[in-house]
Image (cartoon, rainbow, N blue to C red):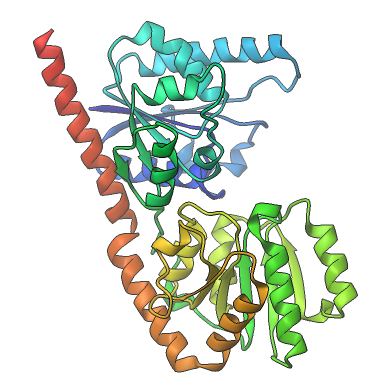
Length: 376
């Protein structure tokens, strides 16, 4: 069985789709599968930036034109369609991950490919931002001809309300070799949040929670790992509140450095306004960290309040501060929640657990494809 992965980005040192795609590629290769990847990037990577395992002839990175305009985009789509067609024409399973120029190229090339089994993965913003009212709804047309997967039941429900049928839910995975709890060296009162500094990420809520804790006299030191347009505003707000000594904005952190950051945390925080299946929560659970998070629908599938972590209403900084304070002051209870979270992640979110589900889907579709071919 030949499998082709078509992620909108492909890098082991990024989060989200790029990271899942690179992990899945390696996992399938280790299982002996014939796997190829076509992806695109907005910049050229130097060989030094790419791990040796990701430099094979079965991984094609296309760098589209940096020019703006409809003609340049159309030419890029056609070039990419040719590349995808050449890679996919003998494939048994094609899996798209993300919605981008890559999939525009795929739709064009599908005309030439005939009957194929397509697996379409909606993840995070890619699914939440789906617009069912679009006049020309190519994404829906494509999804109706694919086996659709999401990474949370919440996102499945959201898409099905918009008439996108979803066949399977596979949660985001955690790499237990990389996120190894034996690395833990927690620093007292150190709280960590790993999330881009965008409005949807809710970093402002976490900052307000730190301010609230400082007003209560609770010793706390918060590290924000992530960058974005809110950084300057949040830095200025911390200065205005007089809590600059308690807050550190670390900027973007490469994925392979996140375990070191989590290892030094006593509590992990995620105060997002919207989540599907947050990788970073799965990874914090894999490192047996007590988690205080906002109760977005996706996060609440991982975190059960008082059992595997603590949840607060979205946008409620005082409730978030209450939960952080509880975890910092009640070590025994926090440790019990962290242990429960680790067990949950080990049983439900390991690479083998999540990626075996992908393989089962591929096997099932491949068998159906062979039966269909025999009947034609």
